[in-house]
Amino acid sequence: MIRYFLVLTLTLGLVLPCSTAAGDFSGERAFEWLVAQCELGPRVPGSEGHAALRTMVTDLADELGLNWMILEHDAVSPLTGVMMELGEIVVSIGPEGGRRLWVGAHYDTRAVADQDPDPLARNIPILGANDGASGVAVLLHLMEVLAAEPPAIGVDLLFLDGEDQGRASEPLTFCIGSEWLAARCRDFGNPLAMGEPLGVVIVDMVADHDVSIPMEGQSLRYAGAFTRMIFERAGQLGLDVFVPEPGRSVHDDHVPFLRRGIPAVDLIDFQDDDWHTLGDVPASCSARGLGQVGALLQDLCRRPPG
Image (cartoon, rainbow, N blue to C red; front, side):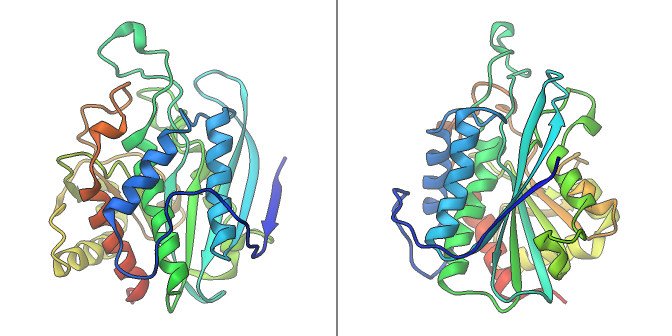
């Protein structure tokens, strides 16, 4: 069953991390959003933390006077075989229709710590500070910055669900929400159908203390011009966490868009010792990568490619 929920601009009094004004993207502010998510606990689909994070995203959009939509759908969890209720959240900023930049991150966290060095911990849900919260933290603060000073082009922020519920060593069982959304991005009633995407930028695992983001392999192979342009822009801005060299290929939320001919790049540092372990906590993260990734995205929204 598909359920679309459209909410137009509202103004509510909310208890959220301290407010911000227009200006440069702040890594420290984004880190506050990372911590706020982790305080909700694991955000596995169907959990209280997952529902609370969905509310956090939509409450912020309401507070900022932005239009948002949740596209709900059901899927069977590859890990458990149990039906999950997923929801892709689209928050739209700037002018309607026309050329648009799509920026996405997954907001679910993994139900098992299957890479933990302790075998007894491998069935425990991870907190997902880097793998989940870091990308969402960038999007939440970017929402604040762009709402305060709207961009010249439309920007759609995609909070993607069900990315991390796949079976280990079976890549095609991951990225459930982005696969669903990419397949329906032209459907009537879908907010993404209202414009033409310049491309998709996925943000994932960008808060490691020694963060280093190369050109992800599938991004470079199937959207080479788009990927090189983004890394050239990072170089122009002096953002040294971006390494303009080929990196490993990762099956992430950009792949469903690439398969449908939409340019997409995955900004990811996959070299994280805490990946899918109980060590993926805020203490293992820093604001540096958040700040530089956010600065790049802010610049791309202000000075769109093409």
